[in-house]
Length: 375
Image (tube, rainbow, N blue to C red):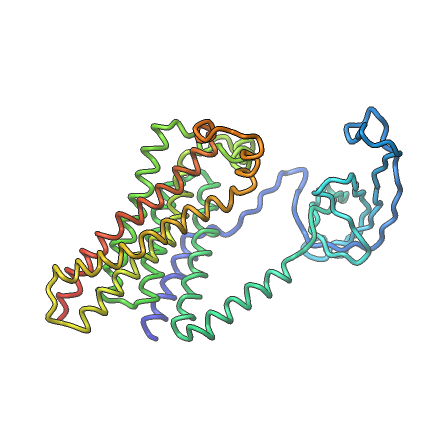
């Protein structure tokens, strides 16, 4: 328990020292911000769509309309809490429409210029549902894992904190994303594995294998990405970021995302092998280092297939609608993999899998050498 408290304290200190204090930026004349709000009143009016309107569908014979909602919003939080203003909300029949009703809680985008406030609803507030959902997961983690579950929860909070309070803000400030991701990955590996396994040779073996695997994944992605002329601007979100911050190094941001994406799976492999080798040694302390290494490799081979599938299936799952679109249009496979965004996902998934492969022998070797040297 003392070790857990010490490690947790070090993790909190790490986040507080290196984490920037805020994200917000505002201009001298106007302020743009998001705030929670409520719909106080809604009145609707229907407007007929004319043939020269882009929304007009010539295949429909009947008259076509879209709805304008005249909405009264009230700000529920922040500096402008209690402020009431009017705005409009258009319902055009698109899937991204937000149909508002009196009493709805929404996220407001506010544009403040002096005493004048304008804004509109960007989406419904879902944080209460998300908080309950996450709380149930945390509760299950603690009930099922007890002290181990609590340690896992602490490591999860540290990981999220490192990403949102160190990696993201420092990258936005112009620091090299790949360098920051490397430091954050090493720190997360150290904190997570020592929280779960304690400060011992088993943990050290897992850390060595994890760090080696993640660094290899990033290096492989770096070289293959450069050879393939990947820009890091394959996704729409990256292109939007480029419009706002063109000076950022987007190829390094892409490689940093690969490193962070592979970290969890590689940590899992490293911890599983180190823990297995440790248990084998405890069951038979006369076993040779060679036998321990072979046992670790066998465990790694069993994990290898499923873990590689885990990474690849995760990336395929996130791109599933796009793959369906390609299938509908009968794109040739060799044509598809030449698209920048598809090549980027291939590099991402295969680099992560390479990290897993390389972490296995390194962890097995480190475990067989370190664990047998106990006193």
